[in-house]
Amino acid sequence: MNRPPRVVANRLAITRTLSKIPENFILRRDCAFGFRGEPRVLILPAIDLRGGLCVRLRQGDYAQETIFGDDPAAMAQRWVQLGAKYLHIVDLDGAKEGRPVNGDSIRRIVESAGVPCELGGGLRSEEHIRQALAWGVDRVVLGTQALKDPDWLHGIAQRFPGKIALGIDAKQGKVATDGWLQVTERPAIDLAHECAAWPLAAIVYTDISRDGMLEGPNFTAVAAMAAAVRLPVIASGGVTTLDDIRRLAQLGLAGCIIGRALYEGRIDLKEAIKVGSG
Image 1 (tube, rainbow, N blue to C red):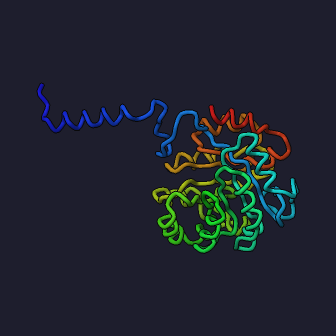
Image 2: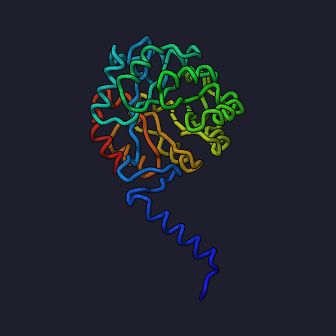
């Protein structure tokens, strides 16, 4: 059957275009483009800052703090030397005070790490966001202000496309704000649905009850979140074993943040990255 010239020409153009795409090029589930060999589940070591120190909290409780180092930049270098390709930084003082506090430490981490970093904690205004990006972080994680004012988040996402990750912190499925000090009645899934079509980089979902407890993630909650939106979802809180990472990969998570389990030696970062790479 003879086909119209325009159809033939279009098919030839498509064929030529596809022939130029590298064999290892794939379209990922989250609609971002990547290459085979990239991690199936990106492993993000966590660096939590308080008073310029590298610390970890239990369930976000500032009274349950463990200090793991007095040189966060050196800690960042350690994780990068072990293979980390992306770091997750939290300004705990900033989260509590509602403004960036540990700027000097953050700048040193970014400069010494040499890999992309995301920053959360205390970023409540456009000025704060611009300040953080000027420090060299790849993207920022917005929580409290975004959760209190979704319209503000929508505008920020439009002005900084691909540079904003939405941090959804939840306790028993309900959104928490203000450094986890306040728990609302809003279901976390509802918030994710509302923001799903915005030009966000990702959703960072933290189950507060699992954070720092070394009891494994809330797989039911993260699976529901990953299934609810097409944005990449990064799990945070409770990742303790290599099997946890394997299960997150099976659930379609784009990444996971690991904190206490790395610092206490329960997970070997090299092995975690290997498992995450499939």
